[in-house]
Length: 167
Image (cartoon, rainbow, N blue to C red):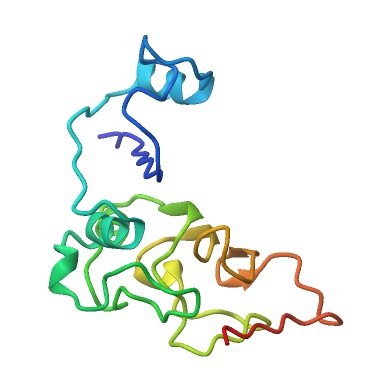
């Protein structure tokens, strides 16, 4: 049987009434409206935390984040929070024949600490079940403010390497 497409929008600071398909919204969101109007909507979603890192961790792992001492708002240089051996939502979907991807803010750590942004970053979302990733490592206010596609900084110039210090 044909498998339905699954799209999960996990957005910081997006209220239930913000998308345009909600009649009280003043925002124009035609693409989200189309998804909502032609697909199946689940309207009772709850997150495990009011902050991004723990709620993303819970969504992807199915594990209550406060059972993991490291599952708090991570600093910009944090190592990957999710163990690559752990079963995750994207790894389960991959086993079921889905192609998986993550786009946007990650904020679950990258690498094993002491990242060299000029080389392939691993572990990254690709090691926890995503076939494709196009992410920002953390929040917009943390350096380096770069996009990372499948573990590689996008448009990196080897003649102008990234040097990052969090001190």
